[in-house]
Amino acid sequence: MLINDTILAQLPAAVPPPGVTANFVNLISAGYPTFIIIGICAPLITILVWGKFYTKVVVMKKYGWEEYTTILAWALYVAELLSLHLGKRDCVEFDALNI
View (cartoon, one colour):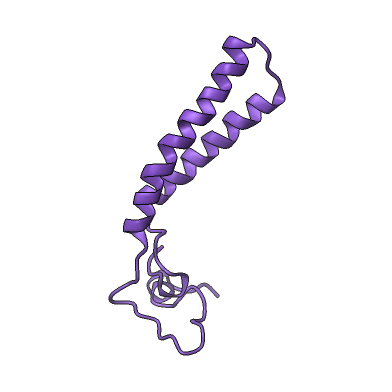
């Protein structure tokens, strides 16, 4: 038996903690502080990762698996930032609607 998407969208993702009532009208959002922190950390992380990569590959001319995994981790971090920016993932889980 499949649940209709419109019915499923009206249900909370999880049971709220004791004493908390789910609010489907005015969702609690952590979007603004999240984007401030991301705006500070993302450029800093990018500069540090690419600085390390440049130093090892160009200056020292010595690289190995750790450089590849560092770039892979950075790429996955950027993908996560894009999914945060493009999606609605800044709501409290039990208040989330249509995520």
